[in-house]
Amino acid sequence: MGDNTGLSQDFLQSVSGKRVLVRSDLNVPLDGTKITDDGRIRASVPTIKALADTGARVVVTAHLGRPKGAPEERYSLRPVAARLGELLGQDVAFATDTVGDSARETVAALEDGQVAVLENVRFNPGETSKDEAERAEFADQLAGLADAFVSDGFGVVHRKQASVYDVAQRLPHAMGGLVAKELDVMRRLTNEPERPYVVVLGGSKVSDKLGVIANLMQQADTLLIGGGMVFTFLKAQGHDVGKSLLEEDQVEVCRDYLSRAEESGVRIVLPTDIVVDTEFPSGDREPEPRVVPADAIPADALGLDIGPESARAFAEAVAGARTVFWNGPMGVFETPAFAEGTRVVAEALTKVDGLSVVGGGDSAAAVRTLGFDEGAFGHISTGGGASLEFLEGKELPGIAVLQD
Ligand code: 3PG
Ligand code: MG
Image 1 (tube, rainbow, N blue to C red):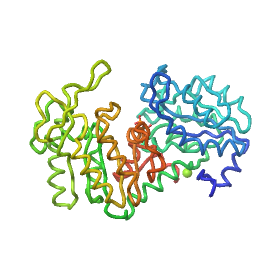
Image 2 (cartoon, rainbow, N blue to C red):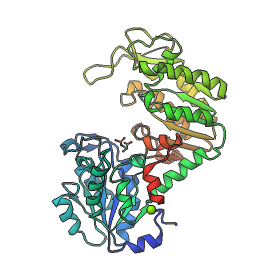
Image 3 (cartoon, helix red, strand yellow):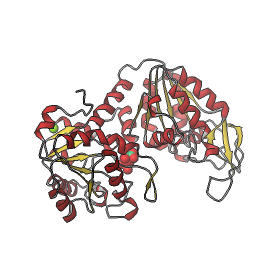
Image 4 (cartoon, rainbow, N blue to C red):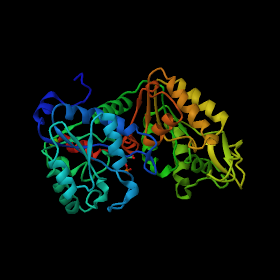
């Protein structure tokens, strides 16, 4: 392949002069209209560029955030389209709707090698509808804008949505290079990974991670758990967690996992110390971080990061691994007072002699926000939920549909 686009020469030739709809994942964090981490846009460039360079008329469809099927200015893709243009080094047209007059006119005006971005595909209720007929109707409209489809939004391949799934049934289609690259790494994680295989899980909600934890207990050697979800585990061990984030209805499940881990031979490691404060960080108050033992979180405090002793232990386990997958920050890394756990774990990943994978929007944004060189990691995935569902062993609809 050499060109690193994943698309075959045959496919590229077949779409020269044609309209190609590309589903990218351009769901980037914004501060107002300012993009705070453009990683996903940069990751989407090679496929779009390869298509444009071959003379295709490229129509990019993507989502931003979770609007409820209607336009909302704060979720507009306009700033994203502008950034894509800068990165491509060419003008990128922008349609102010998804499949309406503006989309049709914008696509009709494209010349060979030009690129357009359609407005947030989730502004149309058909995109995420559970009603097959409603999704189909929208997919028909999307498909009507193009002659071929390229699936390149790895971060959304776990979603059975019109622009990811249904549209692929309506047009000649191909897998984009980003999806191909991401799948390749995911397969290396699941297909006889080099051992020790260490997984670090963080993030706020344990309920999002139950499936993957259950599956990883069969595969990984060590599971390190941090982030907001840790408090449900600590509670399951019988500790008070003060005002920390807690999912009461998951305490039993966590208790079950902890006891099953002992039997299945996986080591589940929880932090032994926690950085707490009396309030969640907010702009108008200087944080007052304190380190307390994980089994003695005061009633008036909430945990916001793993403590230094835990961070050292996690780093040691990571550094000794041959395969590492990390998803979810260890604490509220956006606030420097609570970023240390995440920083230490990220640092350890850069030292792994083997395959180190950072999975997920938040962890990927964290390593860049904390100033790490992306090249120091084996792979930084653009997919959070998608990579977790892959590791969970689930079929990804957006991948399966390409195989038909
Ligand atoms: C993500 O941010 O993980 C992807 O862009 C998917 O977004 P979603 O979880 O809103 O479907
Ligand atoms: Mg097919």
